[in-house]
Image: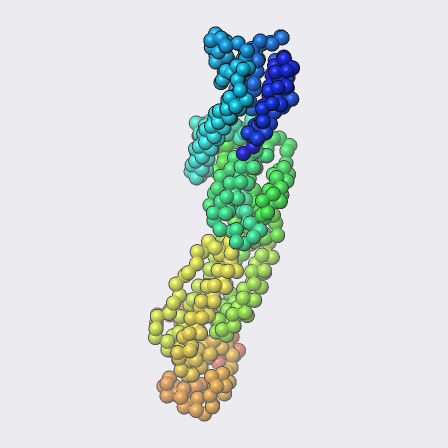
Length: 521
């Protein structure tokens, strides 16, 4: 417990020195200031030394103790005042109580009685502080609830709400001198991973928010896992003071802070704009990892990247999934994400859509792979991730999701025959001219024995099966993509477009163009 400061006021040197030295103040949790020889001296020193408890005589040269008490209570009502007088008169005691004096002792009182009076004064003082702190804390909770409701509405404030905001948060009142408001979204990361639990992060938010409110005269609240600051700036003042305060918080609380600031607004009625732009800026945290402060003005003109993966990317991804090499998959994902971050037009929305298309492509590949090897059990392709995490922690989401698909494929293959594995290999390499010998080597079989087993299980010889598989893929691409016929022919390994057209018509009865125009024929 912190010691409380005591001031003794008496014009008799023997009394004031005796009270300050005879009584063992320190052992009872008090620090005695240099005694004052008059009420006038005490009134000069009180604003500087700020004693919590004053012991004073009544009759002194100049101002009386009661006159001093009257002035002290007007300027510092929290100070406890105890009269210690040589006059045991009821009238004096009555007047002392009227002036806010909390106790009345005689100079004949024993040291224990004086200490007891000081202890009781301390209890009253601490109880008042506790009550005030609770009241202030409750008021802050109510005010933050009000602010949260205002921001959550997402609409412009009316005059009544604006006035109430000013009443609850005077520090946010925008004057006619050109002050502006801005919302900052802070992501706070403890330096030690074991402290990154939700409870620890919330406590960090509370500590940092409370300290920033004092330093910056701002309002704060927790917002969807981040710390939201609502800050006012005077005309011609930049936001360097906010950056400086954040650096200090990082040092004080051993954490890392990434800040995103929204558009500045000239009126509290536009807080919905300040919030929306701050949230948008904060969504760029992964894309702009090297930036510690992301400004809305720096990202608002971005147009986005393509939202669907290419056929080349699908082919590469399916090859990685089929290989079963987790390390290669992780390296590919890391390289892909680095390339995305380097694109100056990338936006969180377009990145989310693009990465989602990769996972969907992998899921569809798994279904096709299961069909191609005759796998009859249900294929697990359900999404096990929150799509919003694709822009917050894309590497983990991609590696985890694609890793599950890779494992599912590996498990499927382990329960299938060599011919079924060969069929899957063929489908993965339809753009190449795979010989029977190459496929047999892939499944570790003698070519002649493999040819017999293949015909027995599929009912077709190797060449017939591969040709039909290529043409089925061509039909799929004609139905589902706008790719040119020459591109489709090349995709399945036919460089001679005329040969491809003849082969396609022989098998389907239609030319590729006719089939695309009417695929149901």
